[in-house]
Length: 250
Image 1 (cartoon, one colour):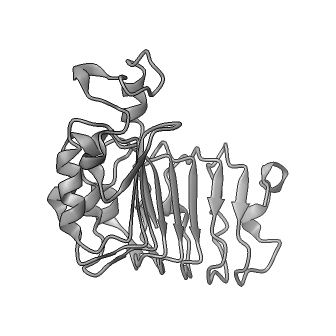
Image 2 (tube, helix red, strand yellow; image 1 turned 90 degrees about the horizontal axis):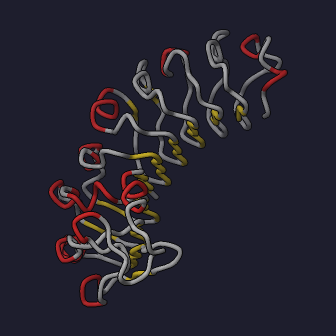
């Protein structure tokens, strides 16, 4: 499952005086409610509380491409692709205004035979939330940093096999409030993975393979409130928590 969230559509809705009605438009006249059925079929679209597209059991990438082309005058606040099998995801399918406006991009229980690439997210220039469940992402490094928007506020991976998180990968993400890498097989964490200071409130590294954490892991994290390290191989109390336990929830 992948979920990508952009805030640009939220700003766009502020120009709309009506509440998600069928006649509601934004600057330039783009409709933000569900389009006619022939635009999005065989997928489904739901109007409330905001228009979102749900595509299930898709086995042809061109079906999705055609839907996005036909939908170009419209704004979906969410797009969900679920229980599908796709040979590939072409880069040009994710280009254009429609993707800059999407707030939620969600892929769940969907197999992409040729894999996902951070290049697919290049055009999501206002991402706020990225969630990946059960897709293979062996490492996080410079490609992620170069292609995923620095507007990111929440990052969640689960069951992605991300054993390696390279130094500096989150260094430019000063808006991050939550990082959760659970059940990923991580064996090592270092302080230089994160921005300095890191102003986020939540760090989760549950169900990994950590046997130790550096003494300075939580240094210069003034707003940190919640840390999850369940089901690792750690011995507590660890020096990294000295001076921090009074403000942390686990």
